[in-house]
Length: 612
Image (cartoon, rainbow, N blue to C red):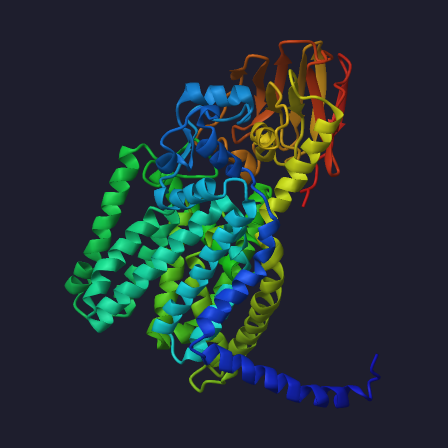
């Protein structure tokens, strides 16, 4: 270790190296090869996903393509690949009997998305290399490379000099928010939608600024393909609107006329969406703005700032959904304060630069479609385009010490603090997190489903058994057990039952007779984002409500103040000690047998930690 006296000399020796690195970096960012190089770097960072398999929704996709008879509702594969429930109570009950959804699932649950273009990419996977998951992930990585390349072309059209555009592309390419969309096959739709959305923006700019008639044709077509890839494709419309507001100096009537083709595309797409019965209902993780406009508007004040925070800073916006509500509101207040600080720093740039205003409005408007879902950084595909453009502009004017920046000490202190925090987040933390983030869903599947279930399967034969999981940390992962068993050629159990979420609160389990016990959750049932996937606040449960299955009846005994179950009784068709009913609880990193207490006695299971 160098002594204090040697430090100045060591620093002096490293300065030429730093200057050389800066010179080469600048040359790269200004080079015409910059988009391609950064796209390749981005693909290299996520190349670890080649070793990943399929996870969660991927199992459903595989079954729909290869054995649709195993799915309770199997519409046309291309049209209905992303339909996981259609709101039919009978089919929902059938899914509940198997164990595909938990007992608290709303009878109106529908999660059905219209994504035929993305479905075609999965059709290619399951017809050309159905058992080669590495090729499927390579397919996603190539879309990711195209995604970064298209973003780079967008930046080059709107930002000068090329150094600033290259810096924005670099920030965008290494953004950790892109990890899950590239690493989880079922989330590829976000990348596909963005590629077409960015193409629409490029075409629109060519048409409006250069008079290129081809752009007037392929831009609306690309917008349509984006919408048919994922609902997030609406984010392209955010930038098209922002473009007409800030980037075109014409009469309002001409601006409206220029947007009419995209409005027509949207109306046609939305009409088909509803004719085919797509949309969501009954879920707390998804809100259909068309069906529940008031509920949607009511969450914007919370979800927009949380998502903006997730885009600009750290940690992932997903963490917010796991917080208990009273504490979450204090966190939200802090988020508002932090975002106000960012706005104050950006105001001088926004006042002076129309392109920055274009990025800012597009960034915010792009959040409106994804606010229909619970906050998660994986939803920031379109938002990040504007955010990284703004950040590149901020860093450039700050370090070039641009004359028109405010000289007031309070502003400079605030701006300096944010600049260095943002550098830490986006140049250090983001590229370090992107590789593991791209494998995050695979890791979650391994920890919460694959490893625990494989261990159980080695200890017992699931055939003829009902597996009852008392407190899994993430119930939705266990819901995929039947599909996992089928994929791994393991004998599947007759049924899977999840009683409560161990991640939510402490559980008190009281035995009342030979076939019944009651579970009281300290904080109530259905507390976090994963639990609310199956039932939202718009469909509360009632005291005395009974959910009857062939081998179990769940009855809500008491409710919390916000109408969630607090205490629930579970009565099985056979005595609890019957060998065909196997109870399990979560402990540390897996499931272990759970012995129900004796009649008249109770046991307490403490809240479990997130197993990641």
